Each structure stands twice: as C-alpha cells, then as structure tokens.
Image (cartoon, rainbow, N blue to C red; front, side, top):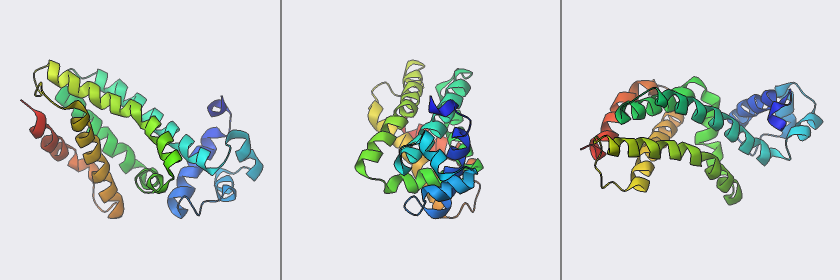
Length: 193
C-alpha cells in the first residue's frame, strides 16, 4: 500500500504546504516535489496526478483525525462531553496547522464534482461519529427523541465548518479553540431536552 512507502508522508506534508500557499490550481507537481525534497518522477510512484494527491492528503489527514476523535470520545460517557470533545478537537487540529486549514476550508471547495464526490466519501466516517454522538444523547435522555438526525448532523458539521472557514478568511487573527464552549452551548441548546 502506497501510504507505507517511505516518501509518502513527506509528499503528503509537502502538498499541504504548497497547496495552501499557492492554491490548488497553481500548485505544480514540481513545486510539491521540491518542497518534499524528492524528484518530480518520485511523485508518480505514489500518486496518479495532482487530484490524487489532494484526495490522498484529505484521506490521510481526515483518517488520522477521525481515529483520534473516536479514541477520545470513547473515554467520555456523556454525549454532551463527547460533542464538546469533537468540537474542541475539530478546532484544535485546524488551529494547529494553518496550512491544513486553508487546504480544507478553501482549496477543497474549488474542486470539480468528481473530486467533491471523493472528498464526501472521505467525510462519511466523520459524519457517522457525529451521528453516534447524537444517538447517544437521545438514549441518555439528553437530546430530544424526535430529532431529525440528518438535519442535526448538518447543523453540527455546518456550524463547525463555517466557523473554521470564517477564521481562515479572517487570517487566523483570533483563537478559534476558545470558541469551543460557546459553539457547543449554542448547538446543544437547540436539541437538548
């Protein structure tokens, strides 16, 4: 599997930086190779093209993130604590890596429909984690039992996504992680019992 080859992570990390700094359309394979410290041809041992790199970056980073969130929320009993943890980790991951924030919030949105379909497939496990938290909250009697699950999921993900996009557009001028509790309170107020 390509992700276990020695230079894969180097190329992924380089792609995050290059795409964030130059934009997806202005990020040539040669720039990514130079940033990674590899020959241009080496890129093609791991990736078919630039689109494959972008999807792989998202798969890799999102996969790690989902794994970390899943692990962290299993330690929490209460659905509200799980949701607070998810919000905190969402904001923290992107706050800690401004280039990744630019890539996920701006560059992934300029993609073609086929690429968006691939990105949506990568997002599905994250949305499943959100669904499980909502279901836990309903079972625990914390959230209304007649909730429209897809709508609540959209509200949660959409709120987090738009909050981070605004922060990126504002040039990372404030501490987004400090908004965790307020965002959590606003969201849960709408679906708590």
